[in-house]
Image 1 (cartoon, rainbow, N blue to C red):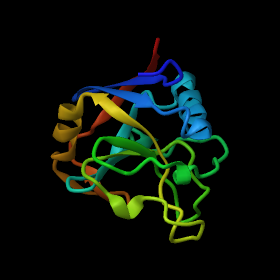
Image 2 (cartoon, rainbow, N blue to C red; image 1 turned 90 degrees about the vertical axis):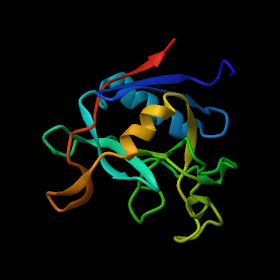
Image 3 (cartoon, rainbow, N blue to C red; image 1 turned 180 degrees about the vertical axis):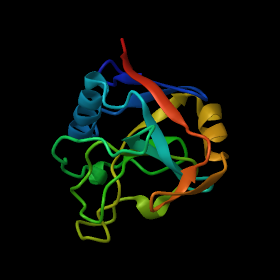
Image 4 (cartoon, helix red, strand yellow; image 1 turned 45 degrees about the vertical axis):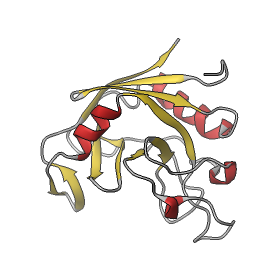
Length: 170
């Protein structure tokens, strides 16, 4: 663990997940994530997309499924050499490679097809900016929750999976 790698604790209603962020390889992404954490953005948000053999995604909706306002999108740093392996955390985005704002996902298996392969629409990939260092058992619990459809979204947990608090660990 290097001093330049901040840690963030996600306290969920399933238990705590500790993340170590890679500020060396993804400086803009880490700074963006930390600013959302410190502003309280993630407190009271849900993991709104859970796919047991893929990933768990959160950070964009409150418990009533209202989308939260975000800051401006950030530059995609997926060409940083980090891979979408099991336990890594990466930024969610739209089809636009440079559209990531607050939503993130934790890979629950190795998802090589999400990695950067080139600076094209298909090749940009998803920027990994850290990894789960404690609480992978919690991620495993979350990935197995029953899901359904809600407000036009698929793979939404039937029982809310809430990030009660997100804090930078000193």
